[in-house]
Image 1: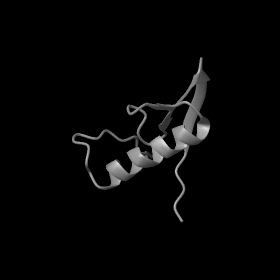
Image 2 (image 1 turned 90 degrees about the vertical axis):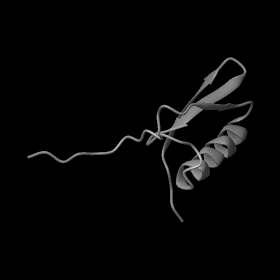
Image 3 (image 1 turned 45 degrees about the vertical axis):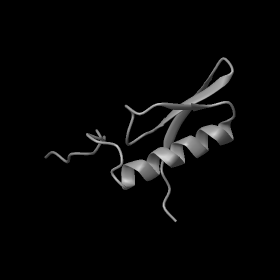
Image 4 (image 1 turned 135 degrees about the vertical axis):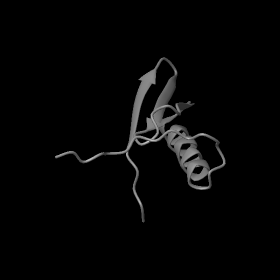
Length: 63
């Protein structure tokens, strides 16, 4: 099973968050569970390339 890190916070009545590898794609939910479901849906879209021009954070090793 693969795990993916995400960042979330509560703003008023909603939980907001994004997948750490894709910080440009913010989503929300009325509960933390709904937020996690929405993040999972986003991840599936990214994996199947349903969203065009996806920007992703990656690591570059320098000497």
